[in-house]
Each structure stands twice: as structure tokens, then as C-alpha cells.
Length: 322
Image 1 (cartoon, helix red, strand yellow):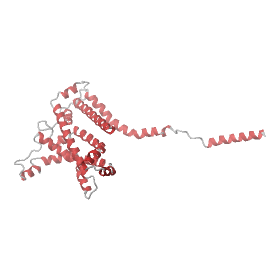
Image 2 (cartoon, one colour; image 1 turned 90 degrees about the vertical axis):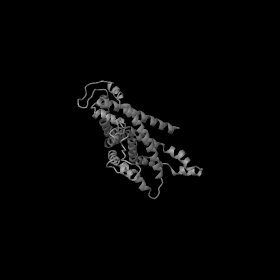
Image 3 (cartoon, one colour; image 1 turned 30 degrees about the horizontal axis):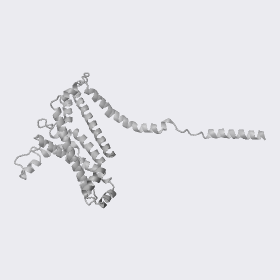
Image 4 (cartoon, rainbow, N blue to C red; image 1 turned 45 degrees about the horizontal axis):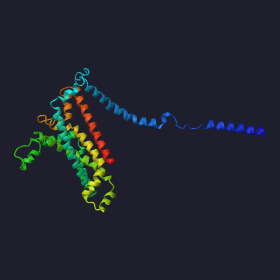
């Protein structure tokens, strides 16, 4: 019997070898180029290349310019740190531009957030005609800021614009009104333009946040006897905090970087009373032809924006944890 058993064992071994050759076992991980990590890197590579070419490299170049003597038409003449930073802070326009930019940011942010929240609450419920008003409120946001600034420049013109003759016809004024001829009126006229342009956009952000609040929460509050003010203060505002934080971040950042509206409407006047920080960067780079000082001011603005955004995110995180 033993030779027969040995023959069967050898036949079984040969069959096993043929089976392994015909159906080799699969590798657990597969080829390295088909792994999930490599695929993820492949998907992220275009975005990483775009950020590197159009953000990181220009940022490094601006950093080099900020510590170099770099005229616009002559190129890099060598390092001069920290001369560019001290020169910009010693400028007679620097601190007035900082104060005006901060004042403009506070005024625009308060008005825009309040008006956008009011409009979002008005068009929150589904009523007949509410879609029309949502469209009307948002429509100015589809217009470019430069185009809107040119439009309002024509409206504000005391000679060719329709506003001044209209006020004279109504008997409200006795002579043509120069909306952009005085510092206060120029500021308020520009604020009106920005509010008209962006109120609908921020309304849309807050409206999305309002619609994410469950109706059951409001119904439970009404059953407990809460009035409209209590519901707004204790339910709507806390649950709307992420949308409010986003609108605050966008509005404050956009206001601190204001340029188009003042460049088109006022050119920084009258008497340099409406010069913003970004306008000052433009003047240093393209009027005084000093890229080094302009880059130094850009680095300062970037640092302030990063600090402001970090504080806002930290405040929002603390509010969510409390």
C-alpha cells in the first residue's frame, strides 16, 4: 500500500503546483502606482502646482522685494532691510490711510451685516412673490465692482448725473450737489455704493444658514411660549453663528482691501482724505516706481489680515465650544 500512497502524494503535489502556476495568488497591496496614497497625490498635484506657481512663488518674490532696493524700471539693486519698512511707516499718508481704512471697514461691516440679516429674514419664508424679491436683492451682486463704480460715478456727477438735478427739482437743495467733493460725503457715497452692491450677496449666505435651521426647533420654542424676539435671540442667532462668521470674515477682509471703488470714484481725494492702504500700495509701486516699499506695505497688510482671520476663527471656535 505504501507505493500507492506515495504515488497519490506525488500526484497531489504536482496538481497543487500546476494550480498555483495557473492561478497565482494576488498581492495584498497591488502595484505601488495603484495605491490610494499615490492616487490622492495625483489628484492633489494640479492644485498644488497652481498654488505654488500663482501664490507661493509670488509671495516669496514679494518678500524678497520688501527687503531690497527694487525700483520698478531698474530691477533689483540689492538688499536694504529694513529701510523699506521704516520708509513706509514714516510716510505722511501711511497713518491717515490706516485710520481711514479702519473707519471704512467698521462702517461697511456694520451696515452690510445688519442689512443682509434683515433682508434674509424678510425673504426667509416661502410666500407669493418672495422669489422676485430675492432676485432683486441679489441682482446688484452680479455687476462687477468696477462697473458699478463707473455707474455711480455717473450718477454722482453734479453736471451730468441725474441725482443732483432731481434733488434740485424736489426743492431739497438750491445748487448742484457734489457728492464726492467733501471727505464725509465722499466716504458716505462710496459706502452706499458698496452696500448696494454686496447686500444681496451676503443676504444669500445668511439665507442659506437660516434655511438649515430645523423648523421643529422653532415649533418647540413657540409651544414653550417664546415670542419672536426670544426666538431670534436664543435660537436664530446662535444657530446662525457659522454663517455670520463667514460674512464677517468676507466683509472685513474685502473692506480692508478696498481699492476699485475709491480709485474710480474719488482717486483718493479730496485732499487725500479717502486714500486706502491698497491705494497707497498702488501709489508706491506705479507712481513713485518703488516696488520695494510697495512690497513691504503688502507684507504688513498680509500679516494684519492673517492675524485678523486667526482671531476670528479662534473666537468662533470658543463660541462653539461654550
